[in-house]
Length: 232
Image (cartoon, rainbow, N blue to C red; front, side, top):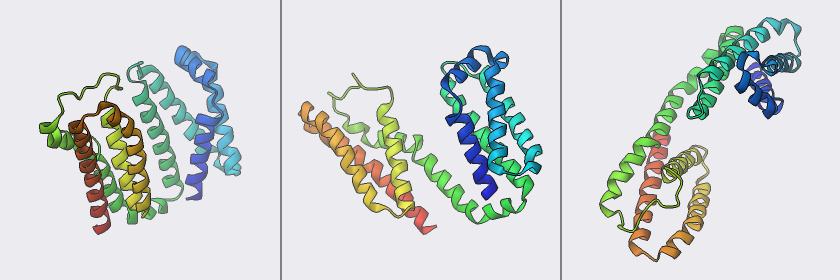
């Protein structure tokens, strides 16, 4: 595990802390012709060797840097302005998978170490997926019959309500898994404070009830998923 932690630390330092924004802009503009790309890879390799503090690790460091550069190039050529944020996460996932493969290659016991948590990990992933778009659709279907005529999306960010709902359900599930039920109360209070101004200005009882029903159903689904996790 210490190898995994050190490699992740090197990645975080190399990809975020010691990569200036002007390097990122240069890479996006010139792609493989940008010398900043190769400086970035050099820094990444040096960080790996410095943190690992083991000269015999150089073949693995070289392999990680090579794959890192390949992944970066694929992202640079494949991403478009409309898909840039998606490629950011694909890029980071690929880097982490590379680190995982290297650690498993060095110590096959690392894979065995993951077995005890693999079943619950699959459950958590399933619950997180359920609490995202599927739950949004379920909630929208349940409360659709009460949608107030005055409720509109003017002045609201696109799909902001949906994303807020997904994040709040994920937070609730994480708090339950961590055994921090009091944090759920804080989340409810915070949402109530932010919503109070909108409800006060609207002076619409139907809108208030509509939001309350949606919020309670949302939290209810998240708590149900937390209960499923505890009972597993």
